[in-house]
Length: 198
Image 1 (cartoon, rainbow, N blue to C red):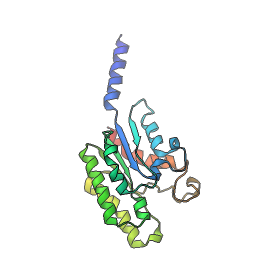
Image 2: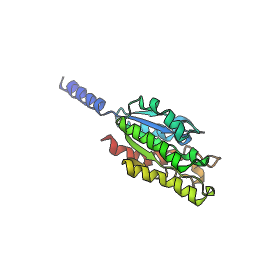
Image 3: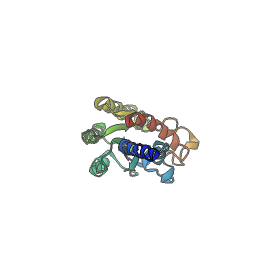
Image 4: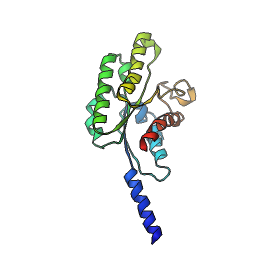
């Protein structure tokens, strides 16, 4: 009888502490070109729950999406009432040469609305190729640390670091990580997420 009581208390505690995580991103988070179950978002959910926890991770990522697209889909993403909101957008804006001020404004609105909804935000930074010009590349990349500091978010500098230049971790297109690269990305995100679960 005592055992059943202790088990009940433990299960209730796990339920109370369970968190909801939403990922709003593009192809890097959507698992483009690979089995979605091998993508870093799925690996994150498995890692968070490997010790019997019951955290829910909702992947609201769409390949090719922009910051404007993410902003347009934000209400649906927030319907899950996330405790933690992981934002991985902007790369497609940069590749299309969108104005950095526009990108920053869209990301700002997403962060503000997620925080107003009660979520702790983790911002994942991206980079674009150097052929876009040093000035544009610099303006683009500095958006992320600026926003992370301004809104006191979790922050992962360039999530493709240690992956993008490692040939056997990349798909043939040279833009998207393959299955070997996914755990590397997941571990970078996990390091920011774990403290927020406490």
